[in-house]
View: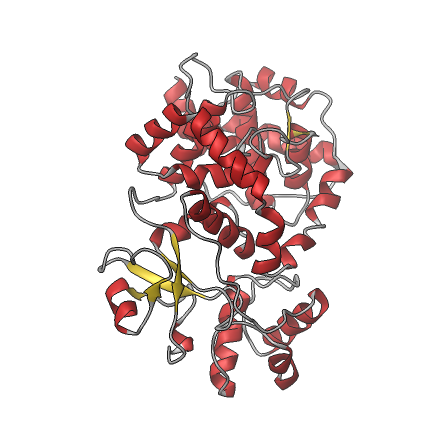
Length: 387
């Protein structure tokens, strides 16, 4: 019965996501969908008892200007000596859990320690938003209902299993729960009991949270015992138009083009990789391996992903990156103007939001090629003027 319910709950459907309108009518629609997927009516009704829209969630959703910062600024704000020291301390404290993760999933402890630090400061700041109301608010809002409506229904299943209390469970404004901030569907699908007490508790049990986080990364395609990001030194003669996450070559090919590791040695010769220049050819340089792409299924922000992946290498012993001397970054207003100009020329930049994401970078690089500029995907005021 439970297996059939889980299968029905998460099976892919062609049903269109709905949003907006009177809140009561919207909740009735969610209830009907949940009943059609096999969830008990009494459980559904109890879940929504007292549910309400939270305006603070919408304000938080619209106020993500921190992601407009460039990589050097963002990473220096997030990575402190205190977080590095705490990472080492928590690594020692939960050494047996990390050993289990490394054996079972092939994921180095630095990867999870970095997420743990950034998401909740090692479980100390897990968020105070009511999780049910946050998910209801974002599912009802018409910006990303395709993401949050399924999470709202999964939260009902999580409640049915005893994994949350709709009236009292709290977390991040976007509905994530626990020390590694996971959404309900991830908890239902990949939740693991890491401490052996028979309960999956991502808020109060660090082993549960860490094992679940590892299981999530594995399910997203993490390749066991392979690197994810590595700082490199690139020659001035490199073809910049072949850099970026939209271009790949083997490690052997990059080495033949003059790319070398800043410390240690490059990854396996046959492994595909991209040269990543977060702030252009004059800034930090990294080789991004297949596992780096998994980070984008954890968080969509380019600057967050790059910082989290780099911090993981620091926690594994890598040196501080060479910041170089990149051209000044555009302001949020200038970036918005740039995106408008690129959109007018037919590029899909993934939305005009003033944030330099992967799609905007690809469009910038294409325009740099067209204009005969160094095509390193780093937008400058000179490029903006040319456009």
